[in-house]
Image (cartoon, rainbow, N blue to C red; front, side, top):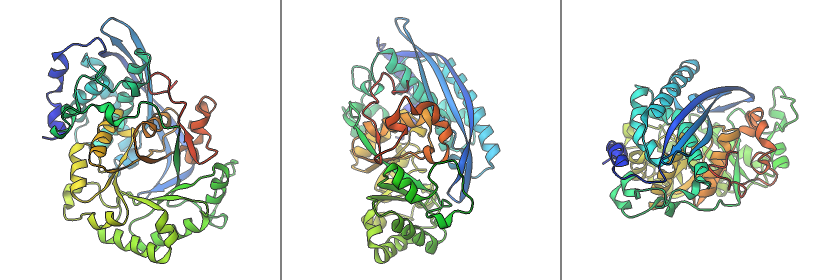
Length: 447
């Protein structure tokens, strides 16, 4: 049975056994902020130059009448989540859905743990979205889910990451995932205390200048504008290279150029944003890099979402051979347990966890991926401010995560500004890492 089939019966189970630790949402309010990028970010064949943040405030109540406030935020990411339609059209549709999600959540009156509330309401969110892609629904719903997790932790006076054991979460993972998780508790797959540091994958967009000679017009705002300048300032050791996927010569040349400019680098992620026509393209790319630039090949830690997100539409396009060379990770394809299991069957060997798909889904997919011994990383959605704190907390509490992308500092630093002085270890990179040891406050750490 799929996860969607399992959650259909969740509301009844929520009501079956009352617990003093349960909460209900009594108020939830979305609001929006708009920011322009300091420079465009090109991925998936498109350039993005702006972002709308969806901020969510909520109030939850315990069975004994105590209340707590929660907050979370997420980039709408409509170009990434819904690339087939015009920007303004998809943004407005997702903003409208945010209003519907607020009404559904506020009117639900469900009692339970935040995970149970999200699992029960997700089918309602999907119905309200109509034909909108599921990925866009998850992105829109994610700050609502995170705000409830944040409020829940604050209500109980502890980190949200301490609320995933049986003292708070009634069900085992079989209830949310599959019978092979029978008897397993979610906290088995979650670190109680955050890892102190996580390597930052610095993004090199497909149109970003690598060297000074590549700059067509300087931004002139005092921030670095070339890869060596960023490396010198932030002591970057991990780099994410955005590739086009439809021009093999350009992709190979791009990786070699980045490698030549990054002598101190230790690891690369190469991200095609699903634009490769097939696995043959991926194999030729990797084998050519190995032959022509062995240092760059050795530094490639993993390959992210090389081909189209709809795996069911091309079941023959498997990644078994490519995954023998480097881990191949799904990103856009990962929307539920069914997609994770299908990807694994098709040879994908890793998953990209994202806060923008929701705290609940990220936790459950992290558990499933660990069960199957898959490669793990945490990816960005140009997450600034509270969204980055949430994403950093996710990376810090999931065992085995290889690193975190955090590119808002590159493209939309204005959205980070109000948070930088309160969380210097997250927003001021000085040694190529996020300092996540401070993310121990109640809730998700979003003070």
